[in-house]
Image (cartoon, rainbow, N blue to C red):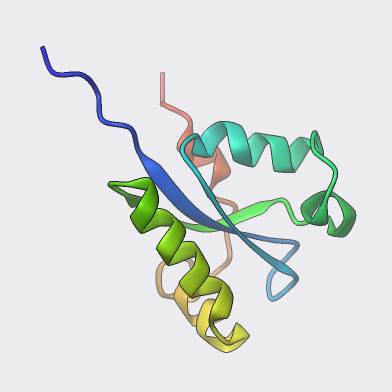
Length: 102
């Protein structure tokens, strides 16, 4: 039996539609977004109320995910907004959809 492959994620959180953005990278997307939402860790997202998961993508390796995160952080704001709105035009909170359906 093959061992499960670790997944890496780049994600964007927003304070509201068109609001403050935060870009992060993690190997545990559900847990990390929960930490942002609950304000568990002090920092930017807690200070500015940036809790809405509006975009994410999966990467096969940590190297690729970190490279993509750095790339997105260098982008102009308009490009980030366009990226979000290509798949999430209403800026819906995608966090509830991460949980497996029972």
